[in-house]
Image (tube, rainbow, N blue to C red; front, side):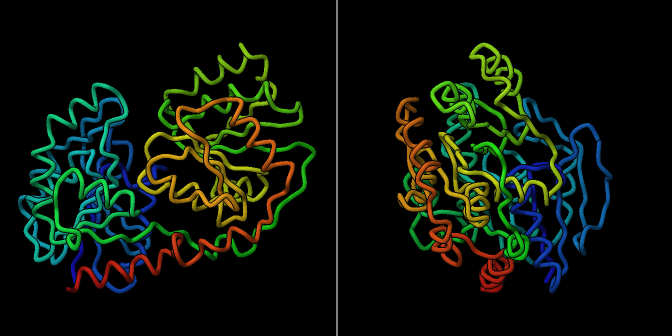
Length: 357
């Protein structure tokens, strides 16, 4: 079976869609002929590459504000190729919709759909282009949602029959977590991992620090346009010495950050699943999330706790203190393994069934 995965970003980025595409591609490549088409903003990465049996071809693109990823090169190539399966990813970027141009026997879409843009301009553009996006989804033989929330959003906004959309959660590599052990440290850690944009909510973690004990440290792993504001705001609130920024951590160091944290917090307005929450729970770390979008599906008040939106800093401070002080039983995280958190190999097997139907 010849399979094409179409990725909106560079197949070398750190975002959730890239992690998803890379993992399913590498697992499928153990049994099938897998190619990935990805974008290559600024031509920073090789045009052709083979990674763990996956053939990667990258195309120059136009990506204002790290969005949309329009590529004329990719469009022209897609019009010429033929695969057994074309699997497109990322409704909010052009490569997903250009994928309909390829000749294939089976067309599958994983939208990673939020339903809105992350700025007023992007939101207006998404609404304007909705008929175009709906046409892509209609052409799909199957739509793969990564959560029940995403499935309900797709059904509500596009009116498809329920059986057109199947839920397959994201995965983790369980072997990465098997040897992790929590290391002691002389401070209490609140951890954030992810892109630094205002909709992700990292600003609330800086703002809540003055309400927490002096030995509570905020660790932020990621990069993005919000970082300069976070640094400036931390200085204004006189908590800069309690905020630690990290970028491009080696995988093992990131996993250890998860394991060492006293609590992981994600206050994002929009998530279709959230791989970082899955990874934190797989590492045995309790989580606090915004009780909205797909993040609400994680809230069980045992391993993951919800904060109402808009975020109230007093409520957030009280909850962080409660989770840290009460030492949540880390065995409570195991409930998610095999249900909402799958191994990537199982995700790939579920996709194989869809591809073969």
